[in-house]
Image (cartoon, rainbow, N blue to C red):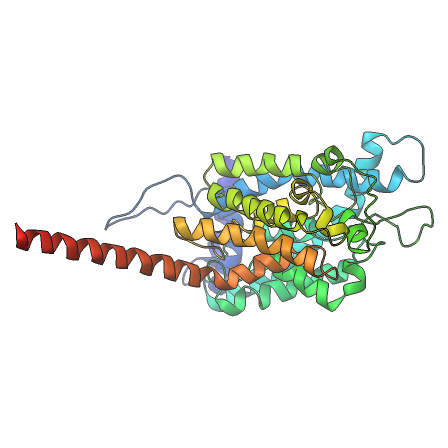
Length: 388
């Protein structure tokens, strides 16, 4: 490590203040802080000293995403291969999925980090690590066969409009990854919806079907061939890493134990979805309303969205009570949208983006409510002192 440290110091020398390439220092420093802990320390004032910084927080989220990503790679290959051959080996399925998905991840990181570096150089600040998570989330919530140039355009829109336009990391009001998905969804709807986009090569191979459970229900078909166990384990078609609730909950456990993700949002999100599912189960209207409420929790992108998107500390609610309200409404609206509007059977995206906008309002009224309670207690205490 000392050898690597010395080599990096040599490389950084021309980029130090007052040197020839000082302007490009943020780009070089980004590689340094990615490999080593920053060597600057606080000199004065009151500070909280902790080993956890933004880089470690982002790395923790990435590690929590890995189980769902690995399963998603295997499932992408399995969903395709098991329809065209009798037996599917693990590595055969995983290799096919990785061959499809790894280029998407490379494009997402290459384009997104490139824009981040340019803005850091232009604005003269250090490169933030926030895109480490966003760059992985974007391909994980996309269909497996979406063209790479669409992934690139979605990343450009998410970083420029959803993030940098508001000032960069920590300033955005919308979740950048969902902003990318929303752009792709409305700009290229034929590549983001339908029965031929969720399984690899379903559009080009006649023997392969890519129909999802929610798509089938939205079309009025109540005869679902998958069991609740299949839905929970993830052996179903869908977005790359959104199908396995089991591996998503494993990621949720990592986030909760490391205190990176707030359990209040996760729990209240599932409660809200369950409540809305129960309400619709009481109405015998169509295949979606008759779909058991507990299956709503383990199918589609609901679990992935609640665990990894709704818990975004920047675009979500900040107060404890606000987090309960925020998460509950996300789950409530997600199921409501997928049932009320068959054109959007995957309602978690719109539900989270909607609540991103209202999160500051929720926190405002929570804070104002606390202020009013304290004023009432203060007034009562003052009245008691006068009568004493």
